[in-house]
Image 1 (spheres, rainbow, N blue to C red):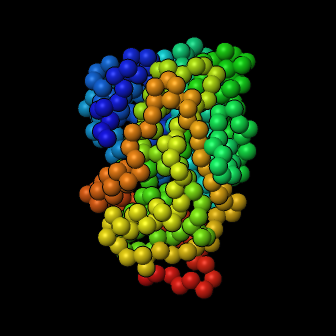
Image 2: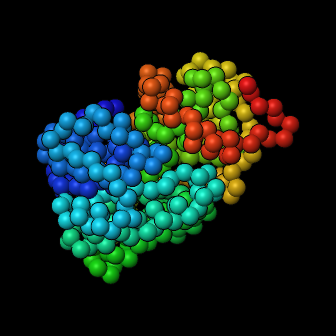
Length: 356
């Protein structure tokens, strides 16, 4: 499950000079570690604003790589983006506000980064004459998907939260730049991703870190909403595969394709792997407009040679071990801004006493 085992075949098709926007975040840093772990064939400039979820510690293992450079900056800054784009052949855009719950509390920031920021990157890539532009998007743009259907790339997009709407807008801008300016864009739509280095607001790291501290696991509503969980190294490999072998102007879904997993199942898995009591489960008021089910059809990515390799049980075991062994990474995070967000977002159901 290490990023050393990526893509002997895919690496050959990727532009060698890349600007990775949002590369200090969870999935972006996994992608950077993946590429630079192949040796000295890549030059990667990471541009990251270092908001709450960006963390240079995520890139510590590649800091000494001769092809690595870090620039702190905002993708909405046309001057910075234009200068950096002129020095590379390709942009991969991970930069985004990403959490649905935060988008409900503060939608404006999502529109700024996910729409206006994406526009600045696209325009810089157009001016620089780039060979590739890859936009990292999400399965959430498809909206709620009734069983037994799975979303295909040709399906209509029906976002239902400020987050997914902002990502859908970014996707459409990409396709418009392909149609209008012939910019060779690619879009990947990944399913719920988990693994080491994930900021603990998302369900998997939140539940793991809460369990390790014997604190409540806040399960939305009845816990029956289901997702297709994808291990982060698999997601990074999928992005690399699309970047190397995808067709310009196309979207590619990246998901495991197994039976989607519920919030209740995630909680039960975390409790078992951490040796914690199910008394830690706390039912909280459901998310407004909560999509009940996401499920992806990833055959198109399979046709270019990608498939997820890490099953949920193995990936969760590795992830729990990482958080158990790296408390110095996440304990400082779970204070300040995070603690304020947690208190604003999770409200116990009436009649359900908080676990202390």
